Image 1: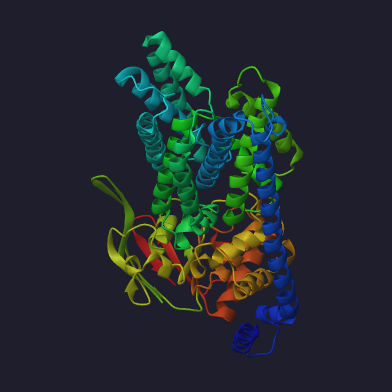
Image 2: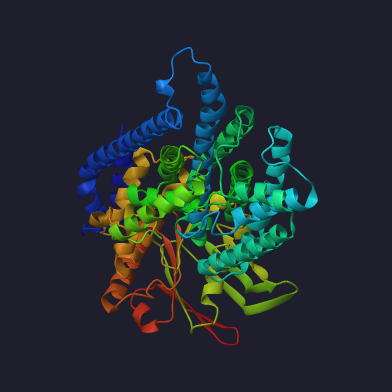
Length: 376
Length: 224
């Protein structure tokens, strides 16, 4: 199986050193038998470790999903099998919420990973770069200024319009960030511009909030706190497969993403169309952030912290691995946060944003200090 | 292998063009270690960017194997010419092996899976640079000299006949500089590569290079 390679190397050596002195290539030949053996072992080890880790994370997601379905103000296990409440609680309340957590958690984490690798900076994320704020501002415009779209309405049509505005907002900001990134001297400049942009958009949104009427304001503020429980199963029938499809598309970027991690010059030299990759990443993140923000509100923290945590936990730079881990870890984090929300307060629903940030941030800070290495 | 034909290099900014250097003509063959010399700011990096096809020429042409460099598809060029640039890389869990393995990107499928043969080439490249023991180290833990060797190993894994290095000795100490140039010389001789390397340190390069291209202010070019 390895014969062709060894033959190649032999040619290499015979061509290289006619005078018989020991050459670089000869040194290689001496060690080549060892390297072939170790290479093969490591290859199978690392891919089997990847599969094991991915399966463990998948089990974690399933376990958390099951717990999220079961516990809350009423435990599903305490109901009798013929109870009328059972289908209502499961299909109208718990299942949509659990699925939303999975979709939003995995989607936002993927966006964070893509942006962090593109900018080669762990500070990048949809929230920090202002992408979420853009989506949020456009939703504010749609709901409080332009028309009276009811966000919490049960009809998909209303939400679809919100989603379009939200995607447009996300797209708008990502385009600005990318235009700047072509002029900017360093990635720090881009992040600073993102932060500034996020402030400007926030201020504009504040202005709209100030000028709008009390009940419109209340629905908007509730939405902006991040809420995973306003989606219905019929919404999910559309956004679930849509987000899954976009996530799968991202997996086709594994090779260029691995190249861009070196830097843009090297990526280009390795035959990667860097500009094309940038555009693909904008489209993917705008769509995912737009859709998720429309249905759940701007969810902070998950997008930036899950990829950081994933890189600290799993010491690999390969994007096939990191994308898989991020998607699964992101779903777990949001499921976990929602589970905590349900267990702590049975009287009222805590906004999931509060929980992810309150519990998640200290965890990431701890991980950053525990790790000796800089991740970016 | 590489030919410059009455090349004018520089930048286009909106409507105006800024010419950095003009009237460059030269021809380089495999097995040559070409030193590109000149003071800072004379246009060495601009020339290298033009030669690698990153920057379009203002006029004239760069020919690689008789074909204009801009006529190559990116994936095709990736198998002909590799680069080592001045910007330091690292972080994001990148190990020395990962960086060298990225040299196989032009040859592998979309999911980035290396075949056993690719893995063997990666290891071979690491061993050729004498850094096989560092393969599992994170790149940001390495010294500048080690990091530069990793980048050259990446170029070797890319298996291109031409390697272009922009100021590879910039961050290195005295010994590492000499070690780096003797490695480049050996590669040229043993593997029949064409290596273009820029440096402003004339005395350092002289004993190693087989030819030199010196750029001086006022579009003066000397080929030795």
